[in-house]
Length: 307
Image 1 (tube, rainbow, N blue to C red):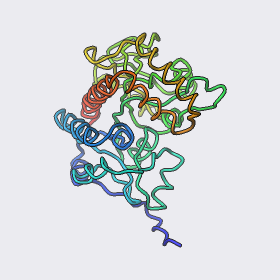
Image 2 (tube, rainbow, N blue to C red):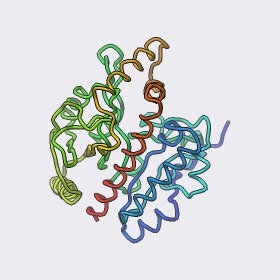
Image 3 (cartoon, helix red, strand yellow):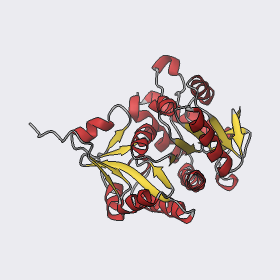
Image 4 (cartoon, rainbow, N blue to C red):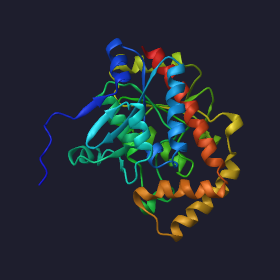
């Protein structure tokens, strides 16, 4: 039998994040599943370093979040980041299993939901990711709905993304967010984006066109005592997008492949993304990297405006 941990949460800050917290500087949380489950080494490490560098360029401090041997890390030293990028078999952690990985001294990468929990616990208000999870297509049959949506409703972190992943049922995802009372703001566009594409075909519930305006909106929510998170949808740069009509062809084929191979649960999203990577000859990954970098830049600007 393994010896249980202390009741105190085993959590460590990187030296850079600890210094930023001490001086009240802007910090941006980053997830780690994109590193462990999103692309192979060394491309994942190069992407992670690039995203962190962009945040620093904008005057904020990056805090990549992960669980390593049962320790919740808020920010990684570069050697830790490199080691994580080469880790095989890391757990994919959401709300349901974040505490499990810590209690059992496991290593795992945080999804949107788990990153939000850890960021809030560390007092970090802004988080940059690629795209959120949501209601899967044919969810009325599979009941497959991401924990990201409930986390956005309960945890007070601003999440900057390129919209919901286009493999999802985006209209139903927006309906659930509305029901949960989550503000959905598209940055500098009246059209809600669809991850690889700038246009989902749906009008955005709200629109703001500056980081300062987004920060001011959050401050008003704080003054009103409104809890929960805020979703900022940041369209992928036009030069990097794959048009929606083209993407739908690839997504349909990938979904057919998943049904054929009887893929379900947590395996669905990585399977579909890998299938789409092959169908697009790698273009989807290039777009993914561009949109993550774009989101990191906006998130840093918002974090700076908040402080």
